[in-house]
Amino acid sequence: MREYLNSYSAPDKIHNPRPIHLIVDATYFGERKEGRSWCVIDARDPVKKENLIWSFEDTETTSGYLYIREALEALGYTILSVTADGFSGIKTAFYGIPYQMCQVYMERLVIQGTTRNPQTEAGQVLLALVKTLHCTDSYTFHIRFKKYIERYQDFLNEKTVHPLTDERSWTHEDLRRAVHRLARHKRYLFIFEHNKNIPKTTNSLEGHFGHIKKLIRTHHGVNKENTQKILNTILFASTTAPNKKRLNEIL
Image 1 (cartoon, one colour):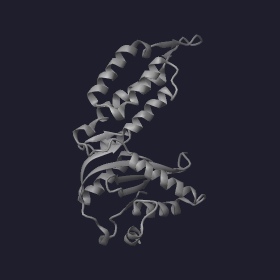
Image 2 (cartoon, rainbow, N blue to C red):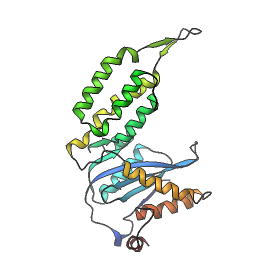
Image 3 (tube, rainbow, N blue to C red):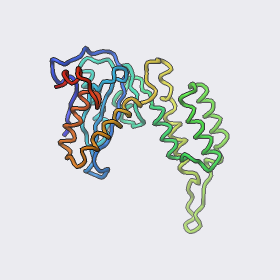
Image 4 (cartoon, rainbow, N blue to C red):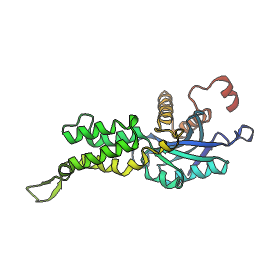
């Protein structure tokens, strides 16, 4: 069952809804095995560093993110943009709202195919290209990516014949996958150029998740129910170290 929790659950603590550039993401807890892991989906205002809505889910789904959107809009928020990772359900759930693909996450997706130490020239050039995301513009990046495809197309299309079965497979399958991922997401990598207030990355929320997980690890062995109670308190405070004023607001 979905559990819906947010900083506005108490009428005397409702803030004035406002237009926001949103960051959304999920982080997992428990063992990453079927039926043994779960996640919290969080929507955060990176400017005010405030968790607005969160939901405990078994896994990331389109409906989970749609639930987040509808809850925010029901509270009166106008979502100006959403910055997130490459999970396709997010674009679906926030359809009609400008979507910025996290540039850091895009780099990670490419590295899955190239590794951090590519052994081929094509891999080295692709890794170098994706590392320029944070310091280039969309026109330059798209031109460079087009030239990359033109130069390495034959290499990427090489196939290997397996002698025992005569089956053919892509010789550089991981690299091809990385190229396809970049091609699929590149249209969403520079949405911030239309509005400088749109965050380019989900770093604000990922950093927050990192602090939360460090704190949770100090409570090793706590069951799911109590872990969620701890998470609720932290997310309610929007920080792992609330000041006295914030503590008075949430207690």
